[in-house]
Length: 77
Ligand SMILES: [Zn+2]
Image 1 (cartoon, rainbow, N blue to C red):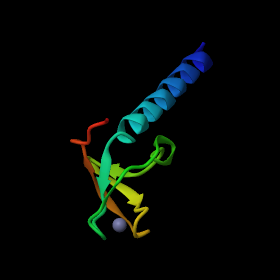
Image 2: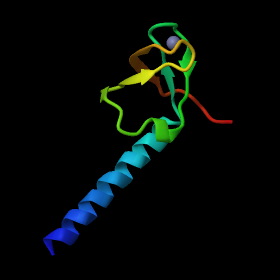
Image 3: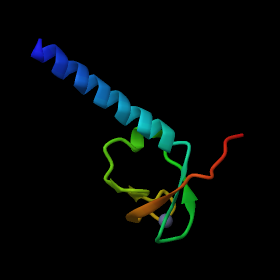
Image 4: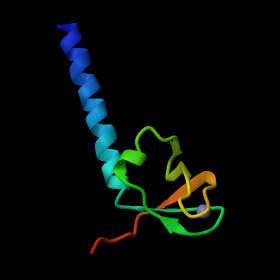
């Protein structure tokens, strides 16, 4: 019983992680090094360190790793 409960919790956590990454892949990040905006596919946003709206990411423009702020006003279409 306990094993199945643990497994269910693990699946739920994995689902939440992917859902969060999918939501973030629709946002843009602001690079503090070069000041440009970039988007990343959801699978590159898995298991990244973050504090509130700042994510530790490598910028695809200048290659610098830094704390990138999320820009949520990004609209699709
Ligand atoms: Zn950059």
